[in-house]
Image 1 (tube, rainbow, N blue to C red):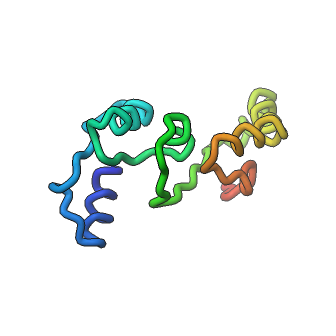
Image 2 (image 1 turned 120 degrees about the vertical axis):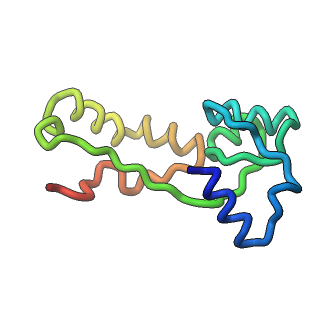
Length: 114
């Protein structure tokens, strides 16, 4: 997870993690970012949108892609089609754009069809 990623990235640049105060294990990104905002930690992994919401600077470190796995039959059911239509709407795209850090260019694309 993120702890391993942090160790790997720190090692790449020769950073001694003993010289920085890290957030304790938090249940949510909001809690982790609040630790930084309160001065209890120097850095945490998190989303750009959460950093913006708390008025903190954000430095991109890694990009992640998330895919939604859907049963072929369920894909054509009304609830999922309603969700997909909403995700293609200008309202959804505008909101995601206002949050920052989200690339919706491949949203709805079928990546693998078995």
